[in-house]
Image 1 (cartoon, rainbow, N blue to C red):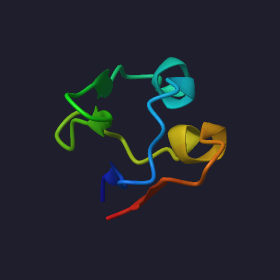
Image 2: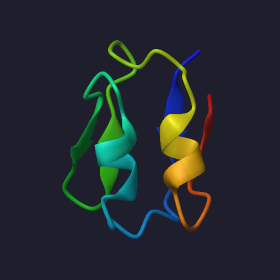
Image 3: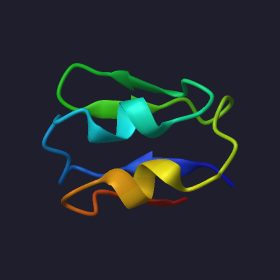
Image 4: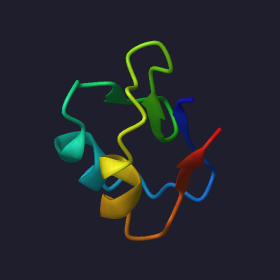
Amino acid sequence: MAFKISDACLSCGSCQGECPVGAISEGADQYVIDADACISCGSCAGACPVEAISEE
């Protein structure tokens, strides 16, 4: 099950550098996670300062 980023995202980029498979990219309004590439490791969720990332 992939992780997702909620509207609480501040676009700080903390999560992008933590993703071991490069599944996170900058979107139009906030960062987004490619569900097909996500390996559900949770590294991004731990790095998010506003807890905007959760499991789908």
